[in-house]
Image (cartoon, rainbow, N blue to C red; front, side, top):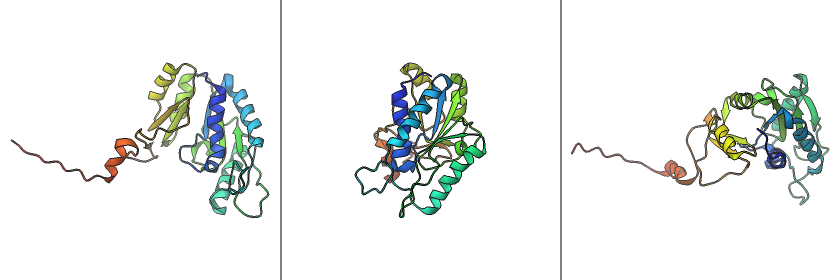
Length: 217
């Protein structure tokens, strides 16, 4: 689908800036129509150097550290797997030069396929994997070809068509032209992204003891 590139790029940049990508709803896989692919990749590449990496106590910091040295090594292994499997490392990949803290630079892997390790597994770090597609059916197939299904995002100028695409996505939550959550909506995943729902009235069920009384009358 052809969408608002600026909105899509803003949503994708949140992978780098929001908790350094350590968030389960991060849109790590950017599945982009080939007609817009180069534009999206170039805009992401231009944005990355503008995001200051540094200590969380510095007001200028946009991207802080990841949680531990072990996790940083895990994220870096995913980044290294990209070029090893045929992807292009467009930005990032280096370790920011800080004496303390476990930092990962905002990283973009392009010309990826959905069979690559970085696309198949949950990176949980500031890494975007950009995958091109040619038509709507292929885009939906790529999006659904994963063991995870927590949050998908659809960006398109035709919101009615975007809604129809959203209904075909195998995810517990779908954002249309937004990466924001509505905390009144039931939140949870499909497949290996969990069971049950939190948020709104559904969240109350987790703290409720239900009783059914059966009376034949």
